[in-house]
Image (cartoon, rainbow, N blue to C red; front, side):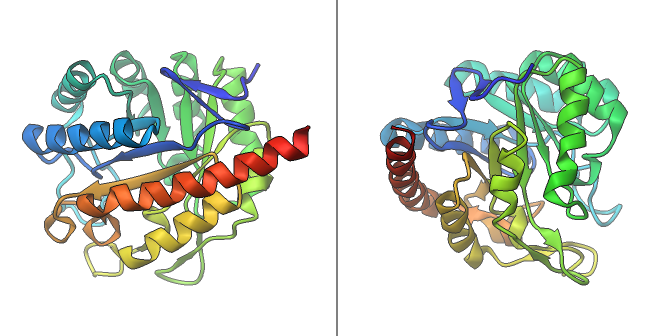
Length: 281
């Protein structure tokens, strides 16, 4: 049976709860950089009173080119994430791409993440759900919001109690994504919280030939709109130097700009929750 609000480590995500922030670099580039970003996020969360879940991938298995950087791999990546979690007391999430990665990642991570392209993979969903960890599944760019009911059912039947669904845009022709904010309440109607992935929503698939492009200038606009539409959380990839990041640089928010954006999003969420409380009274 699903829980609502969902429980992610020490946090609760869903109706009436503060905005959950899932943030971090696209991929683990080095141990030092991973710690620097995580520490900055922890301090930002403490200063603003925001629940932060740190995200970094040990492997980007869906890169456009074979020559693109993928990450340090499962063993080394999970070791780094475990040390971040222990040293900074931050809940952790990472992508898994194969069913046999689920159990190992669940030993380290407070939340497992399923990439959008893999959201229909039954064996992967069942393996993730069977770990007992919360699971965040991004809606495929090719799916209608209502189709995510099948994802929720697979996870619930595998034993997962805490499910998050992510909105990250829908294919609109070639090389472009658009967001239909109606997907937020539509997926919430399935009985789960919805996270808005603001950085992948501005992605331009294949936009740079052997790499995906993007327009990070649009991240704040979309994030503000999504929180105003009722999103329970936001997913934001961030980096101190996005132009030189090894993956998804065009989409990522410069680290120094993130606190201001989070203050704006938290203020919008506060207004939304005030009206939610009044409507429920």
